[in-house]
Image 1 (cartoon, rainbow, N blue to C red):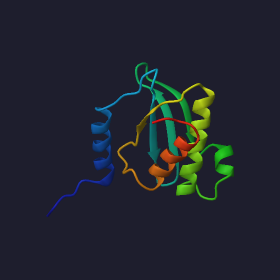
Image 2: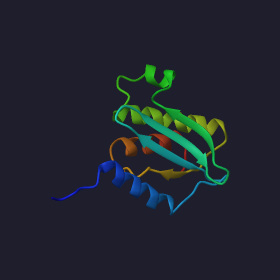
Image 3: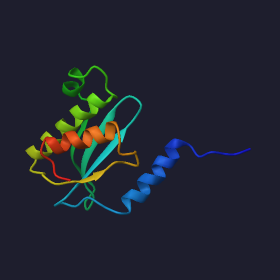
Image 4: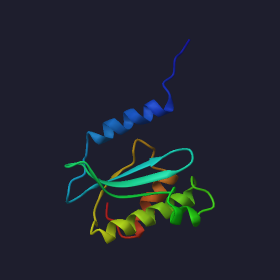
Length: 122
């Protein structure tokens, strides 16, 4: 019988390998993205001290009120603009994009492109 590794374990291993390549600094923090089956989460993190500088998710009332569903491409675009606006308000203009082991397509790509259009550089 062939045993197959679960998708969640594969994603976690990919994320661990990605995190070895880059880290967020005070000058250029890390934009970390996580998506579950029901929601999406984005954080801007300074890894040198381990602080989350800005966070947004589709669980927030103001974001959720404008969305029909919280786990589709439209929700990802909205979350990208929200996180970019919050970051720009805090004075953060450039970040390192951490896709969290997810493939760069669909929701992750939509979030990244929306954040770029809203003013973040990466």
